[in-house]
Length: 444
Image (tube, rainbow, N blue to C red):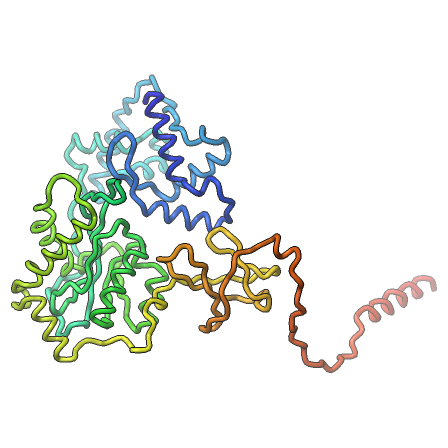
């Protein structure tokens, strides 16, 4: 790697750290930001492709930067540069046998197993080296996993009995004069095969998924079951709370077994063949792609007879609506507030709570109490509200240290403890009598 490429990688890593390099944060806040940064895709400066970076790698870069500055983000040259890297025949044979012994072992796992068994030195094996060895013998691919349980095709009786949600990577799009990665987030009704909500998004984070779900709920009411995989967005506490508040059973796939979501995966295959494959080679504007997507959904997919139900999804769904099969939302429900995110905080002695890397003030009467912060994740500039036991208490305000220096302090109403009947115990007196009584005995 030449110096120019090394500089590009250094600045690219610095850009990924973003606000982390200039803000003082607590450890818990840092871990949240590391995890959030790891969900995004970044265009690699040398390979011209979108990549993801693990939270642990971002954390390593962060502490290297704070330790030695920008130089800590520079790629380190290989320690064995200029030295032969040919592996011993015994080690090559062991790699091949380890793969054949358990064909579903990943390259990373094989490396860890050999290092732990001290058959290879730490850092001696790279993923590319092991991959080349396995590829030469034709065993680099994992075999297809046999289902852990039998599969049965099924259909539900009524709309709303079961919704299935999933995300599929879409094409690159142009947004704000930049080329971005896109994601197609979709929810299908299992009984009618009707897509109750579908949107092309620039992120697959929890907020994006929840926005699509809210759109479906506004139009088609509440499903009885919402079936999703174990992706971070679907396992999030926020989605769990939303489903609980609305009386929806969120059902997650079994670990390592996402295949039962076949109903939406089959739809995604159709979408890929009939929509993605027909797109031009050059990126479209996000709005243009979304417009074409909705047109295909309305004029093609929803309008033709489905081979499983033998009815057109739109006609089927409209019949269910006419028959009153949908579970409508309560009329007095504020759906937007149901989708607010929540976090527990303990109010500090100075009447503040930490949120988003900064201190916010709350009512002084809440000092020492556990409160719940609620906020709209789609309004990052809006400060959270304070709730206690399910009731709104107050808004948070930005901490103003200068104003607090001259602000008159109020006398807080402190709860007076009820009178207690004296016990008559005198522990210090007992100690005193015991001590001096023992001293007098020694003098005698």
